[in-house]
Amino acid sequence: MQDFHAYPAPAKINLFLHITGRRPDGYHLLQSVFRLLDFGDTVHIRPRTDHTIRRTENTPGVPEESDLCIRAAKLLQQHAGCKLGADIYVTKRTPMGGGLGGGSSDAASVLLALNRSWSLGLRREELISLGLKLGADVPFFIFGENAWVEGVGEKLQSIQLPQTHYLVITPRVHISTAEIFASKQLTRDTNPTTIAAFLRDLVHNDLETVVRRQYPEVEKCLQWLSQFSKARMSGSGASVFAAFDDQEAAEAVLARMNETRELQQYAGCEVSGFHAKGLDQHPLRSFAA
Image (cartoon, rainbow, N blue to C red):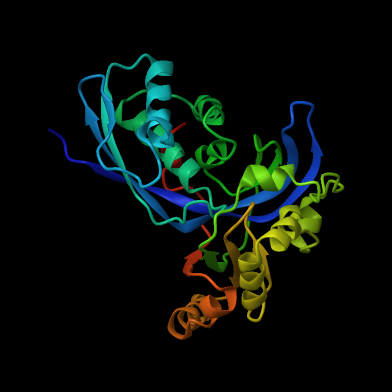
C-alpha cells in the first residue's frame, strides 16, 4: 500500500474587506484582497484502489460527514466518475474560526492533490466551480494567486503584492460569522473602491467595527498590536494581523507576546500567534492547468 503524501494548505488573510451591498438571496457583496501566507495546515492523502473515501484521524469538533476535506474528495470523485478512493487526514496549524481560511484551504488542497494523484486532468476553472459548492473561500485557494476579490467571493483577479512579513495573533474566542453578517450595526453600503485606493491604504474592514463592539478580546488584541504596526482584523475574525518590513521585527513582537504574556493578561484570554511571509502563489498551483 502506498504511503501518505503531504500537501500544504496555506492560510490567507484579508488585507481589507468592504461590504458593498446585498443580493436578494441574502448573500453579501464584497470587495477584498486575499493574501496567501507561507503558514498553514498540511493535508495528508494516501490514494486507494477501491472507491472508499475515509478520514483516518479525527479533527476535534468536526464530524467526518461535515469535514470539508471528505466532502471535497467525494464531490470530486462523483463529478469525475472516478473509481479510486483516498485516506485523508489533516495536521492543523491554522487557528480554527480565525478568519484565515483554514478549512477552505484544506478542501482546496484535497481537490488539487486528488486531481493530480487520480490523474483526472481537470482544468482550474472546473475545480473552482466545484470548490464554490463547498464554500466561498475555496475557489480562491484553487485560483492559487493573491487576488482582488469581488461579488460574493467568486470574482477573482490576480494582484501583485510586495514582499511583506506579517504577525498574526488569534484570541481564543469563538465568533459566529453568520451573527456578524446579520448584525444591524453592519455597514452594507460602502462605496466600491479601486486597486489604486487599496495601494494607498484607503481601505478598512467593515466587519471589524461590529466585532470590536461585541468581542472585547478582539478589540484589545487590535489595540495591543497597533503599538507596533497598523493592525487590522482578517475576515470576521477572531484573528488580527499587522505588516512588518522584515522578519526580525515581526518575530520580536511575537517573542514579546509569548515571553511576557502581557497581551494575554490585557485581553483576558489565551492568545496564540505566528509570523508568516506573504506568498506569491499557492504551492499546489501547478496541479491544475
